[in-house]
Image 1 (cartoon, rainbow, N blue to C red):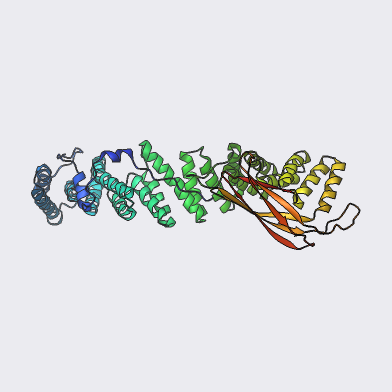
Image 2 (image 1 turned 90 degrees about the horizontal axis):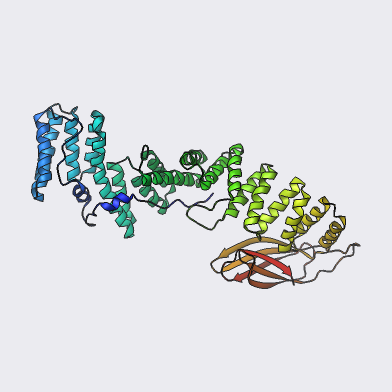
Length: 480
């Protein structure tokens, strides 16, 4: 499963915070995001020491002053007196000392100091957890907004630095972790990206905001994709199982989990999921891409066929062939699955559709003959066998690729010992094949004649046909 990760998503609330000057240092961004009015602690916190009370007063005075130079000086005085209280006056176990020190650090823009001090305050005074989180979030929002603006300016390195800082000061939202992960993935660092998507999921525990819930879900999905692509199947299983607990009906998530189970050799767990995907008609990869629902169904069908779950495999291939009626691989796989089921009634019409696409392929003609045999159409089976005997070459398609406005088919023609029904050898002779390039509805977009020289038995010749035109989705050929 190769799927794109879901695109980044920022909280709508972030846009309500004024952006700091882009050239301002990090400390200014955070400091300017702090409330302009002093808010006394409202969680029952008591100073219990005159130096702690003094530190709180310095904080209040600094917030209320209109002179920037005075604010910096007053904050430094508050920091000094609180550190003295902690280190010299046995206030290291006083949560109020750490609380006010943490807030001073926020107003100074010192994220690491603020994180350390506020973490200690919350550990000692859990009743203040919500209030502390609000102070942290003020600085976090400023960093998220500034990082987002750097991304808009195509400055991902600067954005990444700010998102990293945001994960330091506030860890109860998945957004900053998601943004770090997305940028790391863009930089070709999938292992680090997977790690940060996992951190986003952890940070989202208990979130109720609908936007953050979406970020949480996308993080779990993206982590699963990256781990799956890295063949770290155990981790991918955990990520996709978690994702499907939150988004239980997501077909793409089921596809990822089934692939991870397959990677662990747990086919019994993969099969129910694959059958659900088949019932839903397949799923295109997240974020778009070249793959289609038919590709998804084909992959599942092959897995089920290899598990000898022929009926289930047939259901997958049938839906793929229904979605893309000229898909040669879907028709071939479906024909062979009906052959394994010995279901001639279903085999015959599918094999005939296959043979109409590639009439000079020996296996396709033999599948038609087997369909006639299993439906007791003896005369038609004999005529088909004679047709196979007389084939001058066996044409096997090796590749079909599409691009914007064009497509290419490559094949190999191999000479055969062609015979009449009586066993008389038929001399090798050149043939001309007309390749038609079709749109999704079967309309002919372009065609090309390709000459094939006379080939003795066992000799081979490479074939290439190119079609130009919009919307080419399939091909077929016929003998001119």
